[in-house]
Amino acid sequence: ARCPLPLELSVSATTRAPRTGESDGRDYYFLSQAEFASRRLADEFLECKEVFGRGDWYGTLRSVVGSGLDRGKWVILEIDVQGALSVLQECE
Image 1: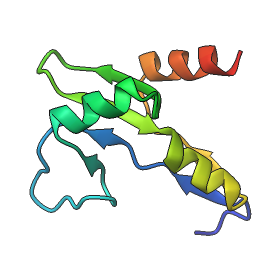
Image 2: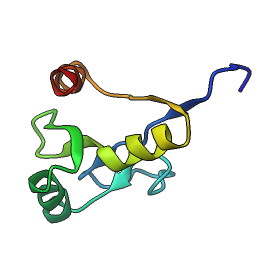
Image 3: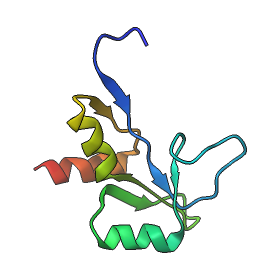
Image 4: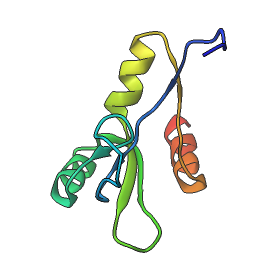
């Protein structure tokens, strides 16, 4: 709150079920497996991976990042190493 930079945390999408106290659009965008797969095929993710070997997917929607950038924000991605590598490859 005290940082003078226009920072904004990106909200990731996931196929896992919400945990107690989590809400859609604040903690994650909770998507069904089918919706996530459809969005993957439509290239709507900046990065996405199936992680932890449980069949759940996590990813960063291009629209979320783009919306923040359009508003002049510095968008912070909260992603794992595999996701970061994907984003770096995307930017090449």
